[in-house]
Length: 332
Image (cartoon, rainbow, N blue to C red; front, side, top):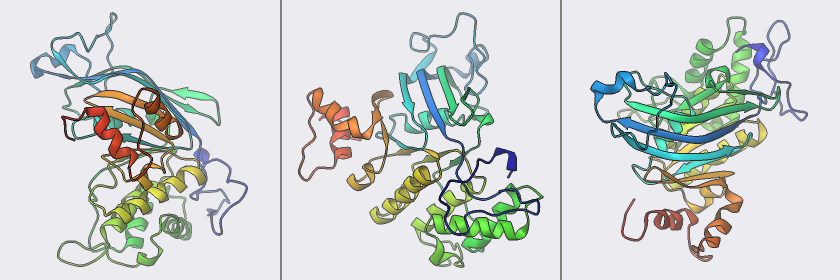
């Protein structure tokens, strides 16, 4: 981990929150630069014929024609995400909510600049990343420290939780980082994500008992936190977890956003009411269209103002909104 990219620690530090290398420079899991996102007229389409992709800018290359490309009116392109604009503030946790096929993962991958070589997707619009500490904006996420947690847990079953993180630390941190500094950093992340009780437990697999599903999910998140990213993307991290472990995971992520200045963005299918309330911002998608893109605090009043008040008693706002956005005759 480069010491030049670290910010000064927060005023109130937890015990053992700062590790130092031989030169006394901070390399610990400390507060990072605050990054906000601004999306303007983002549109994504899929090329219908692969033979015609050479003349259309593939997602990731961003080769723009002088006259631009109108994705919606182009007969060769099927619109996946219709024009949308929204802002994601720094130090916040945002969820992208929608049913299957609504475009959640497509939007998440676009925000994360996660591209695939043979992708037939093309994109127009603008995504910018604003760093508050130096008051600068970037259109390339590669200039900002970030991480992406995929939906599947890909872990080595014969390693313990601690060994897995130490292995990742040895690969990701700089050669000047001492072994003792790595241990301190790994132990700090273990405490931050509630993995203390399973620190020395084998990951395990379907043949050998090991970590629970919730612990494996938190370990996957911990692996990406080794590099101390400013922006963290997660693709449906609660999939396959029971309600309790899903809540614990989201609660841990909320603490990371608030205490360590991280911007966290995740896709999620249909969260429980207690999980839904943990988010600072909500993006609701339906058939590729953005139905709502603002703070959670304004969500209920917004839908009430357009004639869809959320029932106050015995109702999960997320369930109600999912049913409302698609209409009564369609399922998720």
